[in-house]
Image (cartoon, rainbow, N blue to C red; front, side, top):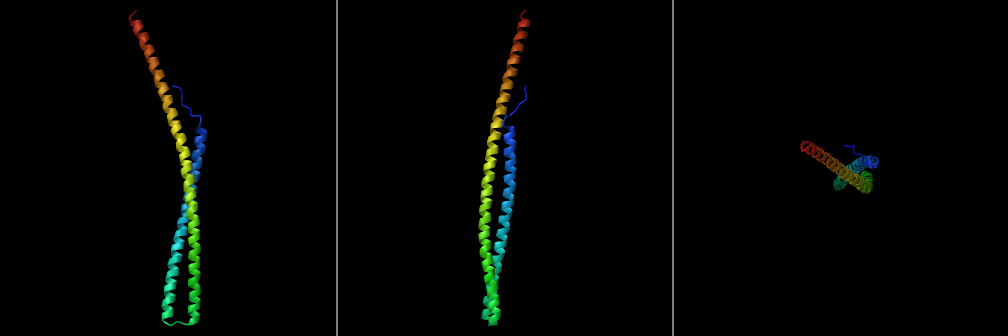
Length: 148
């Protein structure tokens, strides 16, 4: 049987390489988005805790200067949390785009792999047909030889 050769194997290798690169980009983007979400949650929790402490300090009658410094600190935490929320949204969007790019690359690889499998099946079927023809010819020769 003649060996199977898929003409598009070089393209399949390139597309597979691209798929692996896209997967790595997705892992990196997901990692950044996850880290941003954790940072955002931490800042939001710190801001809420700071606001609660500020409220209790104000109710306890703390010094105005101390309350002012604490209020500035809490406001800063809320601003940082809001910035972290925007960053998280941006990084999550980038991860979504990376996921879409990876899925498109995976589809391109799968389509070539399916074509390759189809061509290999055709190659095997032709080889079997050829083998059957050869066996039929041999059988005809054997029958002719016996009938002589």
